[in-house]
Amino acid sequence: MPKLTVWYDGACPLCLREIALMRRLDRRGAIRFVNLEQVEPAACPLDKGELLARFHAEENGKVMSGAEAFAAVWRAIPLLRPLGLVFRGPRALDLLDRLYRAFLRARPMLQSLVRRLERA
Image (cartoon, rainbow, N blue to C red):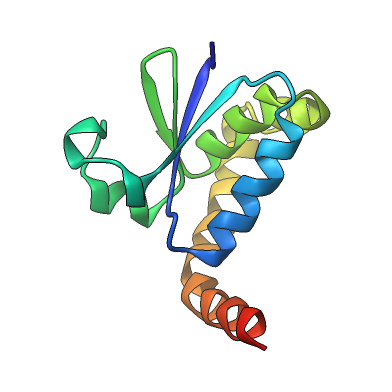
């Protein structure tokens, strides 16, 4: 049974690619992936809009977002576990979260670019 749940934006081409990679790497089936485009709001631990705005994961009843969620996912995937362990401490998590917030500012532009490339 999966130990970690990840919610993702099924309408985001970047998210779909990232989740596809995580699924391939998660050979043990440790992660349950939930497409927010296919789930009722009542099945979400937080407001659906909040879940769509940032990356979220739940482990042992604790809902995490941003860098903390990514680090938890990495720890669940054997190949990425060392990276997840590096980003377990508060200073490393703070650095990763700053990088993630910068990515979020660029995300709309990157989504448009990926959509254009997919149509070409």
